[in-house]
Length: 355
Ligand SMILES: [Mg+2]
Image (cartoon, rainbow, N blue to C red; front, top):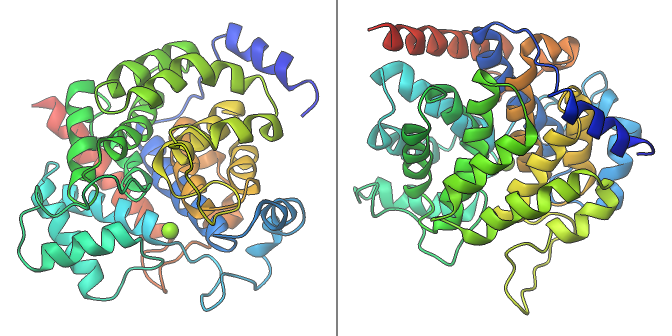
C-alpha cells in the first residue's frame, strides 16, 4: 500500500488513462467481470477478514487452477448476484427494452425452478409474492430491510442506459423496487449502474464521477450522497485497513449490531466498499477484486459489484483469460454463452440508438 497516495494523485491529475476498448468489449467485460468476481468471492462468502485476506494472498489465484470451489459446487460457480444480472440482460434481449414486469417474472421463475444459487432473504420473499401474482410494484420487501440484493445485479443497467442518466436512474430504481422497496437500495443500485454507465462512455475523472453519483442519489439516500461527495475522496487516499472501519459504519443506526465480520450485506457500506475497491486501482482488475474480497463478509457481492465496474472500464481483454473461462452456473451459462449474451445486447442497444 506504500506509495499509493502519490500514485493515485498522479492518475487523478492525468485524468486517468482511458483504456481503448470497443463497446462490445465493455459489455462483455462488465458481465464476465461480475461473474468472475462473484465466483471468486463465493468461495469465502461470510468468512471473517482474516480468512478472506489469507485466501486472497495465498489461494485465490489457485482456486481456478486447483479444485477447491465453494463447498458443494464445482469451481467457477457464480451465485445469485450474476444469475440475476444475467436474467436482466436476457429479459432485455427477449423484449427489446428494459421491462421491469418481465424482469420480475424472471426473478419469480428462477426461484420457483430452484435454479437460484446463494439466495438472499428479501429477494426470496419478493419472489414468493411475485409467484402469488402480486404486482412488481407491490412485491418488494418493505423498509427498513435494506440489503444489497438489488445493487448486486444493477451494473448491467449501466450498459443499457449509458446514454441517458435520467433513464438509467429510473431503471436502476425500478429493477430494485420489485424486490427491495427501501430507497437506500435504489440509491445503491444507482451508484453501481451509473458508475458502469460512466466508464462505458466517459473519461474516469473521479471527482466528476463522485459529484454526479452524489447528485443522482440524494433524494433516495442523503447519507450515501454525503459520503460519496465528502468522504470517498479522503478514503481513496487511505489504505484498505484505514478506510474499512469508516466505510463499514456509514448509514448504520445507533446500537446497530450484526453478526457479520467484515462488510455486511447492508447496502450502503457494501456499495461504498465496492466503489472504493474499483476506484483505488481502476487499471488493475485483480487488485480491485483483492481489496473487495480481503475485507471479509458478504464478499461474493462486493466482488461482483467491483468486478462489473472494473470489467466495464477495462474491457474483457483485461480479465485474466484462463481464469475467467472457468465461470459456470451448474454447467450452463458459461464463458461463451455469457459473452454471446452481452454482445447481442450490445448490438441491440446500438441498433436502438440508430433509429
Ligand atoms: Mg451471491
